[in-house]
Length: 279
Image (cartoon, rainbow, N blue to C red; front, side):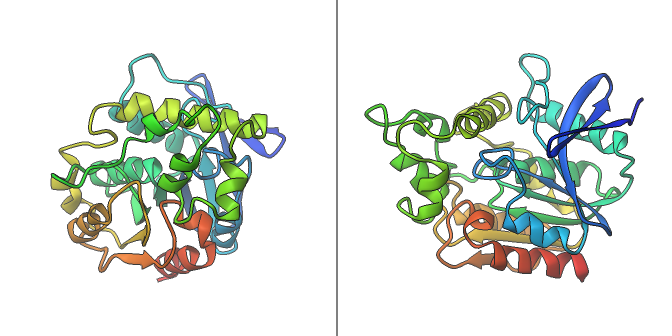
């Protein structure tokens, strides 16, 4: 297996069994992998955001792009969450990461949790931010796929409301504008939705019924963060993650933030994650 790294603008490419996986890297210290979500780096933004920069001030932060996103090629047709997990295990091997901290947002948080329950010996600390992945009766994850199509052809208000605490906030309007936006950002938004459809397009969407009963296996120190106004993944999912992960403690709620809490309030979310990483 080749581990040659090739520079390409801000991205690095690493060969993983003949596939060139894209990732960003910054900082020094304990290796810490961040798996992205929708309103996030690789999910809309092309580079690290203030939240990631704060983490990179304390650790070696590695941020791979999901299959089909930001230059990472798709997996074979018909892949699911299990295939995404094995993809990342091979990425970690290619990067030489035997043990590492693991943080994930949204769909990236789901993947992080799946990895942690399968291979707890590799994950030193686990951080989840608005993580999908659980099935909780009567508390279903919202249908993001329906809202990817703009209302009246131009209006993304419902999509912004799903991802941000305030759909009219400047940051929400900046990255999810009505009408046409920046072409590269539109492409990344499309790519992350396409990836999500492969791993989670099974009503009621973005879940694995078995995961909640496996959380007890992930005994490493953990932190679970949720936006107070998350309109996408109900807070009950955060409570279930915090209760099910033995090392998590109490759910950390970020006042005023929505699903993209690390985007909207990077200082508050970074404070929780840095406390975990340094503790």
